[in-house]
Each structure stands twice: as C-alpha cells, then as structure tokens.
Image (tube, rainbow, N blue to C red; front, side):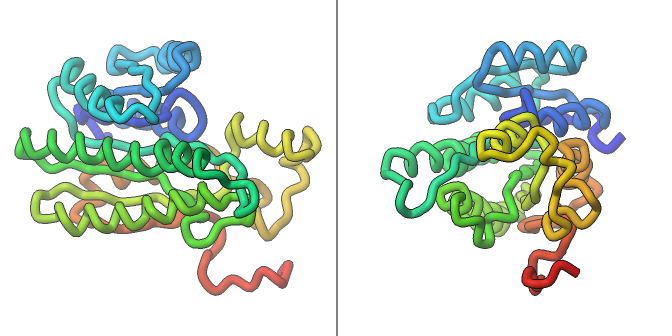
Length: 260
C-alpha cells in the first residue's frame, strides 16, 4: 500500500473527485481527514467510507481560519500530518461582461486563497515534525486558457499552478514536495447538474464529441484518484514543482479544427 499509516487531509472530499480521492487514500492504508462545507453531505460521505481511520471536519473555506482547523484535526485525531490534497473548488460561469468584483473575491477565496492557507498550515506542521511532506493541488487544464465562460475559474487555476511551482522551489530543501494535477473534463454529480442546467439532454454523456472524449467517455473521479495517490506517495519522490496533465489528449499543439 502506497500510503500505509500516513495521515492525509483532502479538502472538498464529501463528493465528486474529492470523495474519489478519499476512498483511494483509505484503500492505500492512510488515515484521512474528510472535509466539506455541507454537514449532511459530509456525514453521508463518512458513513459511505465506513472506516475508523476517518475524521470529518465541516468548514467553509471562505473563512481563513478553516485551513488551520483541518490541520489541527489531523493532529488531534492521528497525531501527525503527512500529506494534503487541495481539491476543494468551485466553477461558476463568468465572462468579462458578467464577472463582478464580488464574484472575483468569492471565487478566488475558495479556489486560490484557501489552498494557499492550507499549504501554509501544512508546511508549518511538516517543519514542526521535521519531516518530509507532500502537497497535491488539484488544478485544471483550464489553467492554460480556459473556455470563454470560465474566466474567473481559469484565472484561479492559473494562479494555483504558479503557486505550486513557487512553493516547490521555496521548500524543496526541506523535503516538502508540492505538485499539481491539471485535471480534464470529469464526470461528477455536480458536473452532470451543470450540463443539465446549460440545456444538455439527460443522456448528454452518450453524445460526447470525440474532440472532448477520444476514448468515448470523460474522466471519472476514481481515475483522478490514482494519480493523486502517486503524487502523495514516496513513489513520486523527489519530484516537486511538477504540473501533470490528467487528460486523454495532448494539450499542446493540438489542431482542434480537425475531427480526426
């Protein structure tokens, strides 16, 4: 098992990609801090995981105090910290006409400020323990440009990418590794609802364009989880500052004009 006896915090882990990562963290032998901002969903996720190696913490990541609370929960329940997955995020639709100052502040608070504060608290704890540590940031292929109606979301993921490399450069000598997964289009309950709200039919997954899904389908949370586990584990050491694209087609140099 790649994470046997390690203690891992996964933000936004009561559903979707985060829950998929949480499940795999447990399968790989780790102890887990489960997090979400909806207490009912968090309780349901904890019951689904059904493990005594889980402690659950509810908290709104727009509150700057919550990141430290997550690290404190790991220490209170399990006595140490070995890794963090900054997964929590939101993807509301905005373009330059619809984005407002208030929405900018909100999206950046969740998608960029919170991961920074989680990383800050985690790095401080790794230093106290005088131990190595791993931080995995869940980014997006939209970090490179993004679709027209994902302006603010794409900006936050671009910032997260820069933060990943900056922290890796700053803390490599302390054996604190920071890497990022730039994840492509993934099926979750939330993504399904977004697509329905945008007018797609109930069976939209049966009508995916091959440019978006060369394999015939889009990614699943459990597939993302396998990659996250690798970057949390010692198997990926000593690599740090890597931004790894989790998508089924190349992002650079692709000719999107062609359907071939």
